[in-house]
Image 1 (cartoon, rainbow, N blue to C red):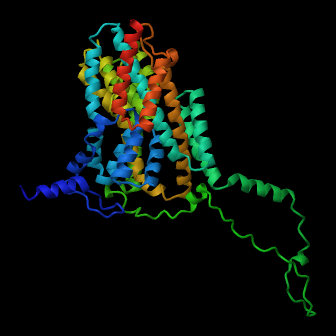
Image 2 (cartoon, rainbow, N blue to C red):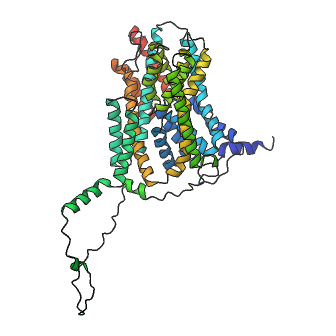
Image 3 (cartoon, rainbow, N blue to C red):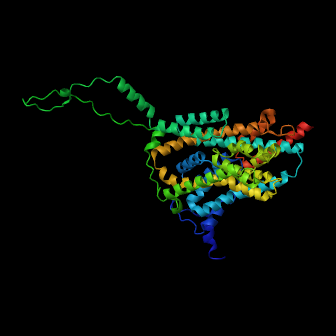
Length: 503
């Protein structure tokens, strides 16, 4: 056996970066070490961004110990607070923090490309089929959607256990869920998360009780005593002391051991200076990256207004680039926006849109790969090859979020030391988890497909689809049913439903 093989195996299985508290050394071949730890995620991470966060927590926090629990929760809040693909940004950020920027970018492609290629192949297949699918195909797709809803519901419950640390975060999770169900608009989701962050700042710093005490003191304040009565124990010329004013003893600081106060007072000095590679440690670099993005964004939007409808390829790129910039909340939020930007102009039919949505929801990896499917279909009749359309869709939908997140990773290493920022991230985290329950509801309402309901219908049309949802949830919660098997089980149960009802 070659003498270097044991060392290579050891470095692939036990590689740890120098900045981790454990102090283990990182493998000298960073790209190989990254592949050894990440190659399978793009093929096995089913269930969408909500489930991805749970998978990443188990792998990067509990198994590999690349980041601690507090850092992971802060990254989760940061990914939700910024636009773009939420789980993809999490995977990318963790790899950048561990390996540096070049290897982190390679990790992004390892994560996203497998199912991007599958979405491109799906587009080629869908473009050549008839308007109506066979009835068993609709039953299979409905079963896939039902299983996916159960998987996401389970992940939402698991994420809420980590997000809820006290009364205020429990309220924020609840309010985030119900507000997202009651109203759906592009501006609404970032506003909800910003409100959650502001709420925890007010709560942790006890702003409202302080204001109330100040108002009460002002209301019941006594008039100021005469000037001569304010002298405390000073001798007069006759040797007689002036009247002494007895001051109240200073109030002792209150002891507060609540979770929110612990977050504000906890020592946060756990190797922060060494927790980021040099390439992403400078806040000036982060500001430059963010400024460069906004310059590029403004240029694309100006050209979109001037040269609209002259070139299909640029129109698709500009629309998807805009979508990738203004989408907050990850994959479930992207669906209505992409429908507006590719179906409304007439580039993709409503049937092909929902058919691709149903299938790509069952794909592992990022849901934003749906844009690869749409980019290929949008090029029909334009003279541009579908493959070029898929590449355009991939770049346009992923680039804004990854670009912005790269800049904020640098700023985050400085901003995370601020108590107010940590309090804000706690509220954003709770509100974002509440929106995950909103995603469960919205996917439930469009999960059913058949020849007459090609625009998507509620899974409550038949109790059998609810049974599949419950089976997926209970199987994952109590019987360790992994998401790939849950998706396959949902497809089989959908075909069983078709066999029984058609007979």
